[in-house]
Structure formats: C-alpha cells, structure tokens
Image (cartoon, rainbow, N blue to C red; front, side, top):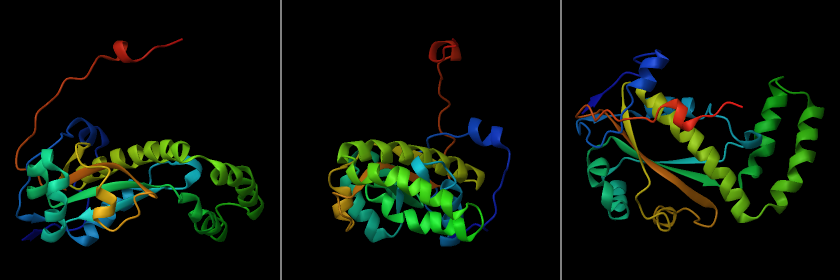
Length: 215
C-alpha cells in the first residue's frame, strides 16, 4: 500500500477551507501512517475547550477487524467505512476533569502559568465539575467535540486527505462495541478520512445576510 510522507501539503488556509468537501469514496490503496495520523490529531487538539479540559477522545478504526465491527453500526455509511483509510470515532469524556492536574501541572512546570493561578482555576471550577449533572457535562463535551472535529477535518485537508463527518450510526452501541464505558464516553461523530477517489460535490451556503445580524 502507498504511504505518504509526514508533511502538510499546503498551509494555504483559504484553500483548505474553501476546497473541503464531504467525501464518501476513497482510494483503498492509500494508507495513512500512524505517524501522520498522530500529527493530524495533534493539530486537531489545538482546538479550544471548556477550561482547557480537552474532553475529546479518539478511536481510530483502521484494521479490517475493527472496520468489520463498525460496519453494522454505520449501516448508512458503508462506502466510507469500506474505502477510507480509517474512521475516527470522536467521543467526549464526561470525567474529563480528572485530567486537571496533568494539564495544569504541566502548564506550571513549563512556566506557562504561575502556581497560584492554577490553584485559583481549580478552586473556581472544581465545584462545578463535581456537581454538574450528566446532561450539563454532556452539553459541554459535545460542543468541545464539535470544535475538535472541525479542526481535525481541516488538518486532514492540510495533509492532502479528505473527510466526511457522519452522524448516522448507532450512538447507543458504539462505545460498548469497542470496549469503552458507554456511561462515561459520549459519541460525538464519526469522521472518515482518506485519499479522495472523487472530487465530491460543491454545495450552496446561505448568504451571510440570512444567517448573521449586526446590532
């Protein structure tokens, strides 16, 4: 199988954004290397998140066995599952505040934040995270998961790959099917990724005067 070198093919942001398409069919002969996938995911995780808790968790479904397990759960997206280099299942971790010390401790160690600021942030938000309802935290991780998902798709474009975000799958079954705690990990979306086998279809966007207001 062909393997690309790990280097973005373009840094032209306008080109990346305007030429992104939702691609459903991919070149089966193109395999994204582990190193390159990690670079794409690393760029994606530069997205913002609530209190910088980075609640996104990625499941990279690329082996034939894993794709076979996914296929019946994504019945309306079979072409993407079968032809893509991988399907990335994006989840939101409801227990994301457990990473506070790891994230903010590193920020202090690297000189990015004074210790007292870290302690103030912890004091300000720990109570909320301890008492927030499941539905409240679900809303948080879904928003943050949407942000990282869009950034992932743009990062993929920079590396010369295309994607398709998918919501049509068995959200109530996917975590458990892959050995994850379904009470903890909330499915955000599936994203197929690979080398496009077609050009996709241009689509119409509403004019700004229909979607934005100035006051």
